[in-house]
Image (tube, rainbow, N blue to C red; front, side, top):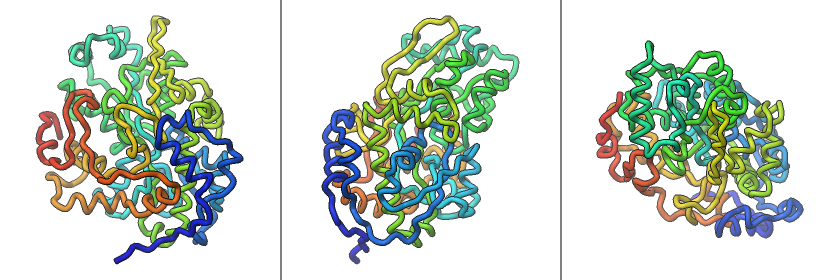
Length: 445
C-alpha cells in the first residue's frame, strides 16, 4: 500500500540546495546567507498545530532546538515554539509521557526505555540531534593520586592499569555520576570502565545527577568523577575543579547523542506539523555545523535562559579547541573538530550519504544490547522481534519525507557495521549479530 504523503512542493530551491551542498563536504565550506535560506521553504500542507512546547535540558546538545527558535527556523515553517527548560532528564521523560510537551530534546535511550521499561508507552525518536559531545571529568583527588588525562599515557591499557590501581586504593568505592540511566553518557561511561576490567555495578558507585549540578558536586567532594555532555566538563576546567580524562568520541567515535522525541500518538494526530518540525530542526542542525556560525551559537547557548554559563567553555567544544585541563597549569588544549557534529562534517566515520540526523536501526540494535547488558529493562535475552521494535521507536517515514523535500541523500540500508577502530577496546559491532556481540562481553549485570 502506497504511503500517505504530506508534501506539496511549492519550492525546493534555497533550502534544498543548501542541504545538497552540505552532503558534498564540510558544511563550513558550503555556507549560504540567511537571506538566501529564508526565500522559500517546502510546503508540507496545513499544520494541525501551530503553537507547540518543546522541552530542553541545559547541555550543548540542545543547540539545534535553541537555534531553530532564535534564528527563526521554526517560524519559517509556521510553528510558534515555546522552549521549556527542565532541570533533569526525568522531568523530560515525565513531561513527554504526560503530554506536557509536544516534543522534546531527549536522550537516545529514552524512547526505548519508555516502550520496553516500566511505562510501556510509545515514545518515538524523529531524528538524531547530534553525534559525540560528552566527556569524563575526574576530581582533583584523582589528580593528586597521579591520574592524568588519557593522552598522557602510552595507550588505553596503561591508563587502565593506573586507574584500576587508584580505585583499589580508595577507602570507599569511588562515587561516579551520570545524567540518567539510559543516556549515551552512561553507556559510554560503563563501556569505558568495563573495557578497563572495572565492573560499574560492583567496583564503583554510579549515581544520577542533573547535568548542570555536576560541577558544583565535584567541587564539593560529593563524587570522584562524572560523564556528561558539554559544557559541564569544560566548565569544571574553567573553574579549576576537575580535569578531563577521556572524551566520549574516543570511546565510540560517532556515537549518537540526543534525539528529537515525541509520543507516537502526537505524530498520528499531527503528521504535517511533525514534518515541519523535523524540517526546521534539520535546517538548524546545518546552521550549527557551519564553522563561521559556531561562535554565535556559543553566545546564544550561554544565555541564562538556556545554559546559563560563560560562552567560553561552550565555544571550546563547539569550535574544536578542547581543553583537557589539569591542576599544573600546563596547556592541554587539543584540536577535536568533530567533538560536536550536528548535521555533517567529513570524518573517517561520517561519509555521504551518512549524516548525523539519520535514524539508524543499527544504533538502536547497539542500544538494546547495552540495555540488556546492564539490566536496564526486564529482558534478559535479545528479542527475536527486535527489528520491529526498533523500527517503531525510530520510525523512518517522516524523516524520509523531509529529507526528500530538502534534497538530502539517504543511506540505502538502515544497518551499518561499526568497525573495531571506532571503539576504545577495538571491538567491532556487527548489528546483524547482536546475540554474539552481547555475549562477547565478560563484564555485565
